[in-house]
Length: 177
Image 1 (cartoon, rainbow, N blue to C red):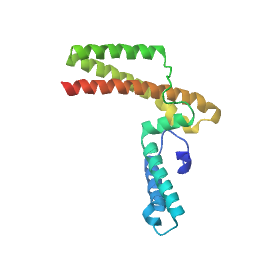
Image 2: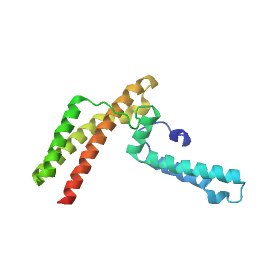
Image 3: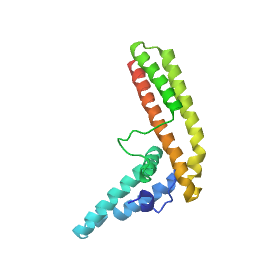
Image 4: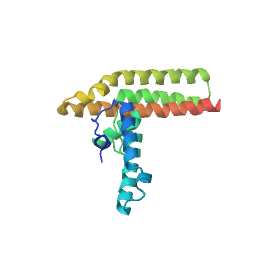
């Protein structure tokens, strides 16, 4: 079941979260197993399945990162365990940041840590600013233009995941200090 179809919503990266929440609560009232306690066992099982689907769909669509990953998977652009190719210049930037992190592990230095954090933040802000028009305009694109937009979004998503890992390492260093 497509989560967007489940809620009769258009496929988009910029979802009206208030509308999604209203749809979630409406479906919850329709499908909650407590409201079907006296119905047939088959109907109870179906309502439980629908309630679970409702919860899963809402949790996925309500979170921008999960929604992005979901849409990319729906279009076959994000496969678990598959090594994804990223632009060499980005990989070089990440390699430089990782080298700085390795040095921090052996020689903690708050100034270097702050510098790495600032570099990661600047890189993330540049990525976010570059992808925002694509995300905002995706829903209005003609069908034949969507694959190119999805490729851009996929690249953005993968880059963002790399930066998230670096931020997590920085947080670990900060916790040790």
